[in-house]
Length: 126
Image 1 (tube, rainbow, N blue to C red):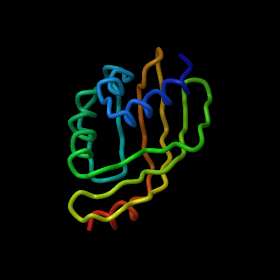
Image 2: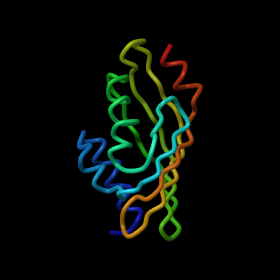
Image 3: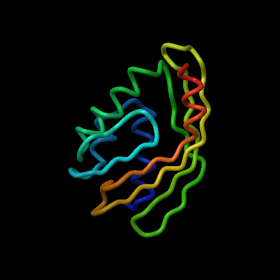
Image 4: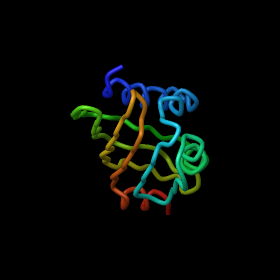
């Protein structure tokens, strides 16, 4: 599967609520870097689930990642889009622009870096 299709499959799995399918697209030693309060300590899909996916789902009553553009070069893909949702405690909505940088190796996601409007996320959390 071409790298861009792997990334599209990742977003589709998250959108469908299928975390196991999203995690299965990751390399066993994936490196995951975010710009917000979630921290993935260590390498691997289990660490991503523990440090990001489970806390994200617990904190937000609803959320979506909606890519609008993809840029691909070899095994690297950049997706631009919006993180939208409603915070579970504050009840406030968020609409934050993001850029995700994905690097793949042997057809699996090897590294992820997130750039997001952290102010928009912080304002929804309070």
